[in-house]
Image (cartoon, rainbow, N blue to C red; front, side, top):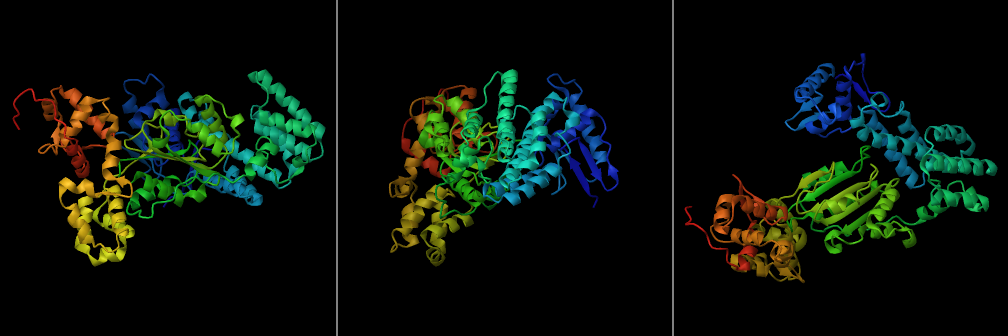
Length: 605
């Protein structure tokens, strides 16, 4: 097998054992660079056209794109570029992309820095930086469309370099870092963290006058170029030096921006807000593995974001919490959890998250957009997992998503959400085998083994809905003298099944009532009528034209009403453009008991 190395940290290069591969024209190089910046993902054709030709691609752009892809296939060893109807993807093996090596080493270094192992942090971060031959894709810097993808990589490279210098300062290498810091500040004069590092290095080397002079230079540069004063943290560091604060000489103190303020905040315990994982979690092995792999490592193009969606009661929160607990060690900066369904769409979620990160209330802006911006700043140099449970739309979430790849976000929703770069994971009903496993975990495996037929009946009556199985298991666990056949007998009649699926203040009927409230509250009478229609006998599967006839409306409006039911997680798409309710949801719909508007023509089906 031919060894190959793809390099994007510097000029775009591809190396094999036989030497460097000629990659062809600038557009071919831009195509390869775009694919390498999104490894393991299919890059849409629309985005590739934008990258290669901007806003006005020629009529032949798609054909030309295909030609460039074929030329790259011909020069790269092995089947590397995979084409689909939606776009192109590059296939990489472990260790072949310098960016992967960089992010892996950087992740290990930042984890070591977070736990206070400064020697390991210096070693790992130094190994990461050794993979960098210059600015990311510096030979393609004039490609404006590609700049948006290059910027996060370059920001990650610079922040890792800052972390490396921070770790060296914590080891006491004050004099050794002064020269590289002066060079670094000259190259990137608007990065205040570098100014803070240089001030700290000079102060701890016995040159407080030099440190104060650096602050004066920084203030002048910021004023000349941006019209701004130094940040409060940098100003606080300056005041601490004027006051000869003894904490400034603590070698192990953090100096991300201001040693005093950051050192105090890092002494606090990172937030650990995850609710307890579901004891009866079962199945979902493939989905859990996919999400766990997604959260592994740092993505230089931005945070890892996954949206787990499916109808109510399908186990979205249980899956997300299971994965969050499994991967919590990868996020030493903490784990934040928000129940969006409980907080409401207009709640001040950014303010709550900032408070839980230890930000004083006096430092949190009142305006939502400003608070969200401050939140992103506080997450920029932390490895934090953010769990947003029960989202109802994309817009409120966008301001909460961190901007850097050290963080990850898990979202649950009843429908897919439009979040840029998010992986969508759709959940369906559990298999019978997984349902039996879940029931055994709740009611006791010995009970399930003792009455396998009755256990299978209970699982069948619950139709693979985890919420229903959880209630059934709780009933059996809290009635130890009752046999499984007793509950199976009570669940058998459809007309009373929802009556039985309730225990301890929770019921499937209440869950479905809450899920359907957006339409049954009166805001969408047509969707309400469509929901009730699908619960009627003979309408278990219904197409758009048939629904339009019964609902006395046009097919377009009927389709919109039915699609809204799907978006709310109430209905499902069937075959041949039909709609249906899940079996237990259909029982709830039938209970509503309202009549559907009269038909406008004789029915012919």
